[in-house]
Length: 341
Ligand code: A2P
Image (tube, rainbow, N blue to C red; front, side, top):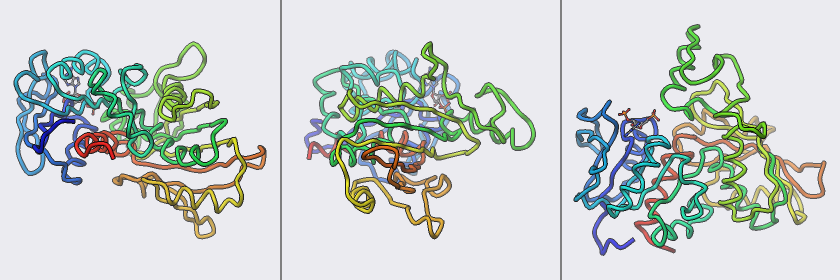
């Protein structure tokens, strides 16, 4: 983006929410350069004060004129699909590039869907299109980071995802449901069934084909990000009583043969954004509690799938609020500021 040596003016839309507050934390931690910042939310929080980077900010109401005359360069949105549908084009028309965490724009052919370790160049297409970049679904982001390295080396025929997703993926109401449930008080603000001491094979709504929206997001977004619509992808998405970090079992069938399983482990170790935790003899494998609060994708339990000519199974864990949402969006903003490599 054309900044001509100055730092960008940034806006956080949904600044008070779970992902919004993580935007603030991650921007601070990564020392994201900015000239000025604006915080937006609904009438519920407008007028309240929140902190960012050591300063107090009064939350402003998001409305049709919210972006006018402020010179906002980058707007990070995490305020739900309906808000993004209505206001992302308003922000873009006022000159901002929107990085949107909702599912609203992800499958729009004129909106790039970006994971910086996987398809960074796609981000720059936004300038010639709608000035909107979509942040993928949390479960998809962490999966495609290792899958990209495997795709580049072996080609991918088929992927089978089984997810074990944390309640933080449902925002504050998911966290509250588990907290209350663990105290013996089941509440139904986020899920159809109690989440404490339970496992729910149901994330987002059911579609006519028998899959959930979450499962089809993983299928469709994997195709778009990896740029190969011939890969067979199927998914079962499950909510588990864990506060933060999604875990996934990923089965991949390759086009080409690989040698020793160590070759696959070495490849993943060298790939960007990945931490290998793979020493089962010493009980070392990726864990939700270890991933929570970090920005990496943890991979382990890497083993040959003996049921196919060439394929592997592995276990993949990441903090769904950070790498699965806020961190990925901030990394996209960093890409835009730093320019194409
Ligand atoms: P508010 O605090 O005013 O409700 P979470 O994902 O944790 O539920 O957070 C959702 C975020 O999106 C909050 O910051 C919330 O603001 C914001 N939000 C929800 N609806 C709107 C809206 N119509 N306009 C602007 N911000 C919204």
